[in-house]
Image (cartoon, rainbow, N blue to C red; front, side, top):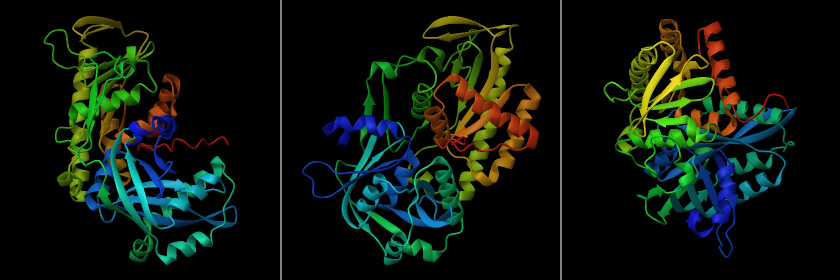
Length: 405
């Protein structure tokens, strides 16, 4: 495993929020590809023993170029998709070199840089994809061009046909190198300084009982943005020691109540029909909203002061200098259901007078990876809430490609 055999690669992998990374190991004949994506994408690849890469034509600055849409088929019509813009640079040459056909090794990392699966694989490239790459003009990299290519990938992939599916590059996962049931335990002290920590955390790809795994993953994300001293896992009420909320972030100026909802990361759930997944998301959001209401009620139980039990100690916080806000983290949000989500969330805001947004876990990771401090995080948070209040529907921010360049 790269994590053990080549630890010098880890800083590079950690710097990449998600994406594809080609490389060549010393002494190895076959090239390697790192695929860094959320656990649901990895599970879909494992179940299907493959994933596809679409060469998506995009017109930019009067030139016909292309990007990559890497698809992981948990659903035949609407798979999970990783988008990769391509530019006139060495990275593009290296990546297309790995994808030109033949044997490769594929290393799957989740967004927190944990290596979960490794496969000997075979890349099959239809002639149509070769021709499309050969006819593409490569533009110089810039954020404006990146945004245009990413938008073009979305448009193309949303309109793709059976012919496009047939012409996509196929990466077949032929043989698992280290097995498919890895269990990873993190004992790094710096990762576990938050309140309520067990001093370690664990993960695995397939999760029958997701709750605690998800909460610990969320906290690892939050620690990119907030000091560990401000993060509380499962804070408890003082009068009955029941949980106030899943996670609490208590800064000098804000108190953020977080409620998390996940579902098992197993084949049966991955293969559910899209209609079932959509219904599950709405159900999870409704449950989380009711729990948020309960937490808000507890915070308002005493004027100006809230008390919680954390690490076995009762702690008091003055709420007067702190804005009370809330966040719901679910497994997956669907773009065409934001009107439904918005009705529920705005109903909570209107009833309780406390701002609330909902993110799916991959989007929360993007917030924390790209918005590296409290100010940036809540600037984005407030931007989303303000838009929702004005337009009646929550937006999705495109993070990682700044607008001002």
